[in-house]
Image: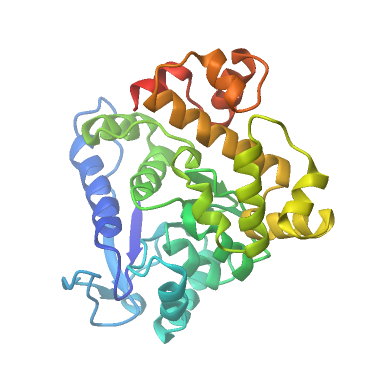
Length: 320
């Protein structure tokens, strides 16, 4: 299998290293399996001759026009990881050139994967239009506004859709690389994950800071402030709209546009966030915590935590 890592100037050091080291580890471990898969050939390729990481390290890349067609292309994150700096970085000419290379390889049958802010580079190519994807959770509002044709599920760590795989923030580069290894040898992927101490994790939801996302829009921010005061009392769309200074329809539209959620769904996210905080910082029973976040019993709260985070009460308390 030929894998190209498409590296642009200012690449996120950790992301690039996570991809290359995960694939290298898999190659080293392959020989220990009874039925060893063929080794992975990894090349660092670029659309410019001179590429440096965000920390200033030189990356020895091969020009994209001088390599054979890959089976897989992986796009690590750009070092610009906040909306203003990322928007400026995406306006540079090498992003358009990278998009052209991605379209050419995808048309030729290559699987394309990207993680963190690398998902923006992939979305710029228009290849994700009509597809499902994920991205860094704190950049989800920017992603939705910039790429309305992409169906974004920012709660997921990894999303695969019709020849494309996208991964969430920072260390999700590991999940992306392991996902590629898993596609041709599940046994090798499981072994590499054990050596790298990477636990199975399907969701970013536990790491999301709802308050951070809410500040992307004043109506959403006012709703978030009201919601935090109402967690124990229950949800009312009419009261929420009044507190946010918008009609019910406008509130729902703004929440969907910024967060990709309904007001009730976001209200439940805030309940989960508060419940997890109480589980990790106090000694109250699940029944007592359930009452504080508006649920009549602990059974309902346990089911919600399992559904939203994929983890139970004991795991959450142990992780504190």
